[in-house]
Length: 382
Image (cartoon, rainbow, N blue to C red; front, side, top):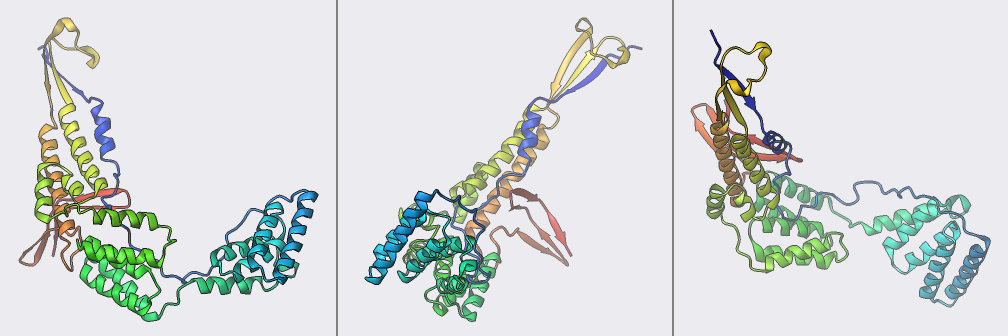
């Protein structure tokens, strides 16, 4: 009997797109400012390892020594600024001189330029200043580092840590209270004020967030994140409409990822949109071809063109991909809704829960860890 039916599956290049889309995606994280989590003074300060500079020529060394001598004369006359400028030039001419680096650090310390003095003391230490007789270097360096760190009461540290725990567990109002107490205990410490502003921002309390973030900039104008904080203040003051839970859920249901985009989380929106797009692409572009052929084929080869009866093409994964895309869209919308709502005592990405007797059914959940996106449809606990 002839075998008139031959089947052949064809996977188009979309399979590659589908697989790549399911690889770890960018985390769904807010475009908000991050919290500060480091307590000052916890770690022992150590100078970074510095590469020793090359020894300059004799002429440069001679000019550097002359500048050092002139700096001594300026010190005798009480002109600290001129002495600083002369030693700065001297260390440029001879960066290998431990003596000049140490003397330059001393002048900076006397002028109150703490951070610059710390840096120069570290340079002098790497050049072997202590072995050359400047034995008070370490003591001076430690005193400057300690003075540059805010003196924090134990209660302030405890309140600050409690505020971080409250944020991580979704208790945003409690976190505001904890950071407020930390700021009251340590009025010169800027980090609790900053964190309180970030939490106000997450709660949608724009005016309070702007006040705290501006206060942080006033307390720490030279902070590394000053530009980012200023930009966030500008965004908050622009009067852009705030995301509401209802609108976020509706938009997320209409278009995949739109809930994240609407709530200001572009990376999250791109992650959801990419996942849905890759799933749909796989369903529409992965095809299976069935060829009806006259007679038996030896060795399982291709059916010759003159013996082909018909070719039928189907999309075997279309239904599954549509269902998966719908589920991801729904979960993304729910995640965005929960993030914007920010319930007290509940984390932003907490799943929907239903109590059924002794069992607890957790609904859809979309979460991220690092750069890996995790999708959980249903979880039952007893």
